[in-house]
Length: 122
Image (cartoon, rainbow, N blue to C red; front, side, top):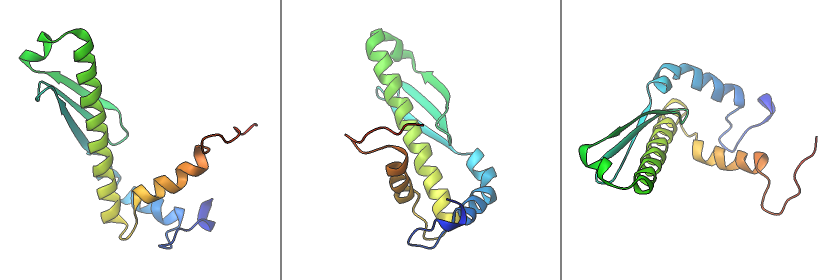
């Protein structure tokens, strides 16, 4: 893709990468938080979606293992969503007019074939 790819706002991949480099320190500090079970399960995730921590309140251990697993998954998913929203916000501030969500949607069609499409070989 390189410099040849441009979206409607005229952003080239090099300009986007330069903006990401410029806010790298801010991106490394992004932490998203998610809560479940009335705050008894709290998860945090980094900008890359990695789970940083899962903490449990006193009452969290009183539910069954299946319910606790569901609460953990919910809190983690919310933390990852929160972190992703913070990354989008930072990129939006660094690259005025750039919509990371729209770019992700546009690129997903290139990466993930539409339902029913033949998989690529090679």
